[in-house]
Length: 343
Length: 252
Image 1: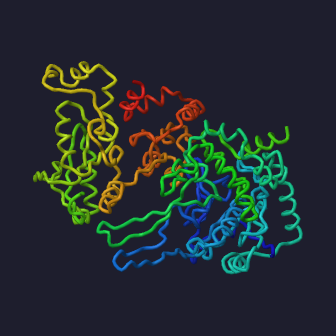
Image 2: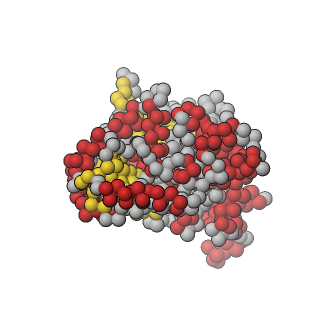
Image 3: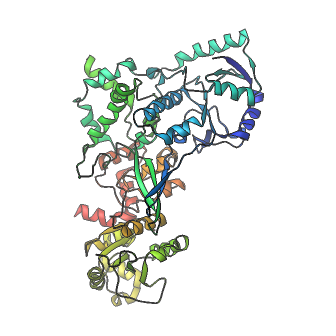
């Protein structure tokens, strides 16, 4: 759609105007790192953040949420939906791609109304990365260094102003209603093009091969000895899954009142790396070893999800690599698999 | 099996402990007064004078640290359909077991001085070393919400859930900055969750009060320590507070 401009001096007013109608969440400082959190004042918003501990996924698939409440007498139940209007402000392009994938996941087959209701009430304001987060991000290999869809508005920092790409009619309306903005002049379009082309070489850390080859690579890697090696290294702590923007597995539990008359069914984030994840009702555990579970994780990202949804299951954000205390990284694993077939 | 399913009789007992877990129970009763409608408490020395012996569920705090404890614990086991270990001392042996690594006579003299002979004692053990335990509420002290959750599960006739994954899971769900990334030291990757990662959330490393997860990758944990400039000795020293009994069992 169209390209608009917001002067940096108008940004505080933009955000405070949004607060009149929306809950605004965005990157905030947390100790030495960053985390998405509620913004009540523009100064809290850190659009210069490198990455966040958890992805903004948590606003669409929260760590814990009530799916429905129930009453045991009469066996009645009432669904719970969160439809508060919300703007997620300052989403990096890797996370935009991840949310785009989750949109497909939760709308395919059995529609997940809890996710989709939240999604329908959510607007996404992205921000272009001009430098890599740190040594772990490999977005360039995964095709997520830029985004052409999946946002309502998308900002690029041009110094004293932001270029704003309008992605949806809802984004256009948001801009018209809440932000002082103007059309892009020829020199501004030129500056934007220059910024975007100059950023490309700065992102050097990447796979040794084209990320689109991952499904084919994984198809011949099921018996690779690397999985056995990961058996010895992995702590099975689940951190890689829990910080991942595309992981969406959850556990479902019931919480009942003390008198056992009422209760709520909740879901909480789960992780396929945990020992009991694949245990079923009859007692079998389909992935007993850490090796099997790590293999499953990398197959999910590199093959199963692309086979199902046509998009890679990893967006190269690097969060799992940062979180892993024993340095198991997607780039390390995938490059090793690739090397095994090219040596 | 546990008598009146609608309102079972429960009792609380303590052995060698600080009674902090029972204090947490008393505190939980203030936020969950409905608990008093759901169960009938017949014995709870810390909270009431009555002493009923007709109970179906026994919550036991403390470790077993002298011969005379055993007969009392066995009587509790014979009476109760369900015995629940309440807190780290009953569950693991806990802090009381630190002395197991030292000569017992020295310890007794250090504590009781010239009255040392007046007091019997032997190496402290978890209650599961003496009787069969049906459920565990770990922690030092126990977590209020987990205690309530266990009671509810028992009321529903279900085995109380006990997380078998490490503290890292809850730390990540809370979006804490990893203690290791802050230059600290944490047992979280090998310690059982369920506490809501309370210590890392408040800025401290995990001390391991809930015990090890099943099948921890100890070699890999050693690698983590080396990577962050620590040693296995550092970890064992940290794990002494709650895991001395387990360390000595593993070494014997």
